[in-house]
Amino acid sequence: MSDKIPPLIAEICEAADVKIGGTRPWDFRIHNPNVFARVLYDGSLGLGEAYMDGWWDCDAIDDLLSRFLAVKADFSIANHLNPANLLYILQSKFTNMQSVRRAFQVGERHYDIGNDVFAAMLDPRMIYSCGYWEYANSLAQTQEDKLHMICTKLERARGERLLDIGCGWGGLAAFAAEHYGVAVTGVTISREQKTLAETRCAGLPVDIQLTVYRSLTGSYDKVVSVGMFEHVGHKNYATFFKTVQRLVEPHGLFLLHTIGKTPPVSETDRWINKYIFPNGHIPKAGEIVNHLGDLMVIEDWHNFGHDYDLTVQGWRKNFNRAWPLLAEKYGPRFGRMMQYYLAASMANFRAGRGKLW
Image (cartoon, rainbow, N blue to C red; front, side, top):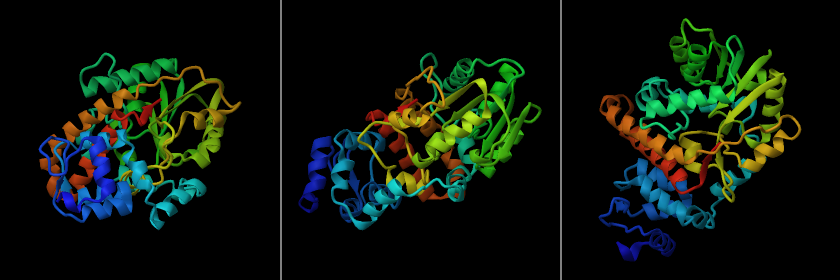
């Protein structure tokens, strides 16, 4: 096998201390030798699709991918641009991939895949964002602690009106209504999320709407957005922040909770874009600050991105436990897709690429 490994692949594996056909948890096991050509041609997209197709395996995919990211393997492969890669880069830079027309695509292709999958994978409140592990030792407690932290930072007061942009399955909305006595309007672009959120928030002063943030009207004491800004897109940041400014009371507060990235990372990973979060864009800190301009004053900037690796480990543990009951409905390729997604997410934060603000 070693004489058939392309020089660039061999160089990357050596730098990352990865052996093809090795016995360590992070070593490659190759089932189809065409995997190398596929990776050289399509980069991360080819690597992820090859795993979904069963062309290779690894006992610790998260360790493997974090090692590749640590040696910037994705940048090395990117130097071998093909027309599809180049088109993706140009499209990401110059096209508004998060236009109104495309707004519901991520809901339809990811959040609507099945509430049973997310209910099995996430904590009891179904919070699909980073937990806060400072004092907790379980996934459920990390999310409870994070929700308390959000409400504390927002200086919640009983009877206030809270707008939750990107409310998911209503976890934060229900929590804020239950524990802090606020009236919550939650918005989502996922029909499946709206249906389950309404059930989970029944009997509480919570209104769940299926709409885009651009269409929102009204006035709110506080506004929060958790794990949604990654779907806004850099061409829409000004619109997003102007919308928030229009909706929040003059002396109100806005809390933004988002994954961030560090330079020189630019476009969203092609595999993630195709299979998990279409049209997404992870912001750099400078992009957020520059687009806020004179609209708002930043009072607090909190980074706990190191907790995301632990959070996704908890999701993977839950998913693996539930998979025997889900496998017949979703099939093996979906299972491998989810395994790769969760491993890639862990690797991104473990290698220091991803941040959480």
